[in-house]
Length: 175
Image (cartoon, rainbow, N blue to C red; front, side, top):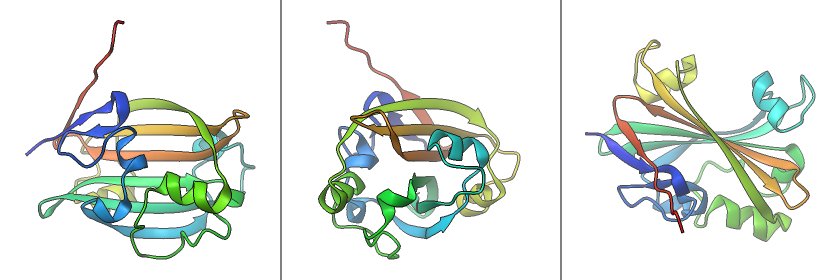
């Protein structure tokens, strides 16, 4: 069964969210679990998006989403260290609020802009293992960089969606 996404607003067609979908949805309402919540050095391209130095760590929180019994997507949220510090995001439990609300309440974060990139790609070894797919199966990689009002990047959300389980739909208003 394909899970449909209307990505113009990151809305999962199966009802897992509304405006900004998984970024605005209470984690506890998502069909999944936290699989990682640690500080680690991001891939170089991702560190560059966060404007980190080559070996500078970021905080990574990953959620494995499910559709029925099958893994349907991996959400990897990378935060600048200052944004994650003192927030309790290292806990393995799902939040009873959205990540955006959590960061706003604890850090006063005022996110202002998001830029996205969508590309078909090969999964990383970790993604393939968690999603239960072969290393050569295509995934749809959706990368969203979230900026504050000063246009400083504070968060990168990387979605890995198995290509045989998803389709994207975009909607555009002409008015």
